[in-house]
Image 1 (cartoon, rainbow, N blue to C red):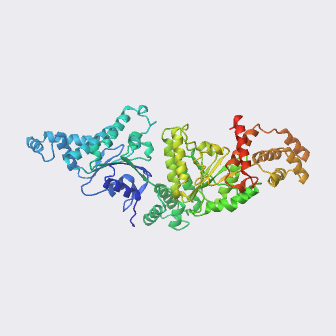
Image 2 (image 1 turned 90 degrees about the vertical axis):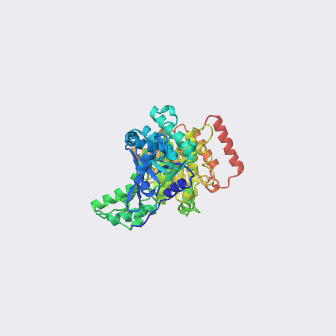
Image 3 (image 1 turned 180 degrees about the vertical axis):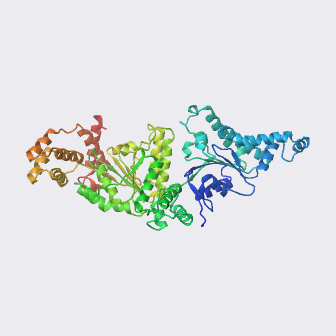
Amino acid sequence: MTEHTYDFYSRLARIFNSDQSRSVILCGNVHDLFFNGVQYVPLIPFLCEKSSAAGLIRLVYELNGPIRLLDHRDKLKNAWIAWKAGADVDSLLIRELRSKGPSEMERLGTEFERLLVDAIGNPTLALEALRQMTICSRSSGLGNLLIYIEAADMLLPAGSGDVAALNDRQVHRISIVQDWFSDPAFLGGRDSVCLIAESRSLVHPRVSRLPQVLPVEIPPPNSADRLHYIESFLSTASATPKLWAAPSELAAYTAGLSIHALRQLLIGAGYTQEPLTAAQTIGKVEEFIQGQIGEDVVEFKKPSHTLDDVIGFSRLKQFLRDELLPRFRAPADRALPGAAVAGPIGGGKTFIFEAVAGELDMPVLVLKNIRSQWFGQTDVIFERLRRTLEALDRVLIFVDEADTQFGGVGPEAHTTERRLTGKIQAMMSDTRLRGKVLWLLMTARIHLLSPDIRRPGRVGDLIIPVLDPEGDDRREFLGWVLRGLLPDIDDAAIDRLDKLTEGHSAAAFASLRSTLRAKSPASMDAVAEIVADHLPPAIELARRYQTLQALANCTRRSLLPDPTVTDEQRRSWQLEINRLESQGIR
């Protein structure tokens, strides 16, 4: 079986071997399977097997188990006995203890063995015992312990970020580790500690934010990782699954899956012996990603309509076909990072750009609610989202009501909100994701979107206004409303309906069409009577304000109602915005 390497392990080894740090938080895809040279195993066995080296003493503490010594048990035990006796291993005092009889030596040896076992279910004792072992190691000259501590996020929970919200045992553990990792003797020694947690944000900041504690992230499996697993599975499986394509194509289709999830997919297909299809694979990916990030945070959307189904908006549709879609499909050096879509409520923004998503033929991930009420959970959600996006080959992020999803970065914004917005901004301008992750932000309140998100290099490269239909586009909407209702629709009927629906938005036309179909009027007079009975909601000023903001923030002259707009006209929009704001319109 071919060798397979992992960059995260190389980085971890470099940190310890170069003395860059003696304490690391290993985070990210920590619950997956990894190839140890022979087979795929969980992370702890993988680390233990890869780190085996002459003279290195490896210890493992897992939450519900004892402290396990993988190497030189007697060597560490003798050093412990000598250290407890206040002497070196080969000192006169130890020889005297041995000569007087085994009682004292046995007592200290029993104490050492009991300490390892008593760690079961007692993480506070385990952490203090491990800290003392590193002191013993330095004192006795061993100086080469490598300690793996699993579930650090449960041992040292972030809680609310304030130790006052934690119980006494949790506070005690945080104090132990904080003192341990800050001890100059430990920092200058040769012993190393690797904390393992899904997210650095889940470990209490008094530990995770220490400057000497470095994070090392395990990314999701890339295409090469998945292909290696698929080939190794097919070469050893007792029931070989039937694939619709070559292993390399399956590896591409399973972008976003962990090795565990890929294993489940292949085992299930092998058991049923039914051909594994592309649709089943994509469904598994979507199910896995939603399960990882949370169904209340993201959902996959498969728009069933395209731009051909969009009524009106002729100039906008031409722009989308000629410029936006080609730039979204382009290679990284020519691709847009995304676009922001502005316009008044009810203007049809979501429907139009769902059609754009349908034209792209790529996964569409709808961001629903990335902010959490729990301390630190927003950071965890974002980290999961980022890892997922990096694992996918190409994905469109669709964000409706973007001004409420992403907050500001000013001093009045909450710390969590500022941090989240900053991370989203960094992701949008990350050159590694250019052409791979596309952003579509919908908002009726473009002015409330952070200026840093609206700058060039992010979605500010293209801010598109979606305005109420006018001219021929409006007549197309009027004909669409009447189509199928009356046997004969002429210009007179459209002109009459035009006068009755002044100021109607795309959503208002859709609502009117639904009402007319429910009542089935038999004549134009009956249609006029139904329309006249409807009063528009009192949102004209709010929609006017939102329209002006969309015009003022638009980044393409060709998308404005009048492409020959002057600077004077643009200044007049801003003056009208100021007047509406003085009336309390926001």
